[in-house]
Length: 317
View 1 (cartoon, helix red, strand yellow):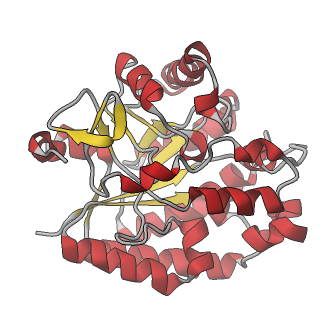
View 2 (view 1 turned 60 degrees about the vertical axis):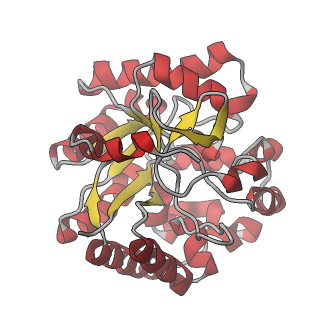
């Protein structure tokens, strides 16, 4: 029997990516190439392979009717929609409890009023998660979180982002604490008082973003292809061989053409984003083909509904 894999995409609109790097939003909120072209390209890759995925959506994007229409089509095709906060603010853990709750619950209300559905999963912008957010997720009725990036190298990633960004906002706890590199690689129930410590059972399950098993290097798409496609594919095979659930993450901007990226493909930022669309599409296809061949791909909602998470109720670190 093949191990389980979750394929996920953070549907950060181009407006939010531009804000993250200190650029003007311009027309990117309403005329958003992530929704106008990125979704269609990614969905086509999935459809050809008969794969289901989870789209993490910001509540602010639900204010735009044509974005809602695109999301309804995604849900109708069998994909899961999940909560990615309202305004995609970096440094979510620097806010007080009331502000964090507002970011999360406002998005839930937008989902219910605009799409007629209630997400059960959450990912914090920039993988910025702590025990307070988990408690808020539990009291708000969520079943899983998928925010934790179990890497030791978050500080290096923050240095790189500070170097290429026009804004220092990206330094606020993005990519999590260094201690998060000690977290389990597989799904687990986190201790309410210590997010990286697993307990036999809990109110919600953590689905950590996959990294390399030993050095804990990132493999999610944006970082992975910069480090080399072979690096990613070898890690996928290692997860399958060790029978570890995989949680592989893309971003909406990964499937946007160079012409639409504008300033993101220029200057220092270009070192992060200036990879041709053809190269990105080919790399994504190879990654999805490998995942499909090695894993049983499902969504967290379906996995939880079918009881796949129950085996983790007896584990203790």
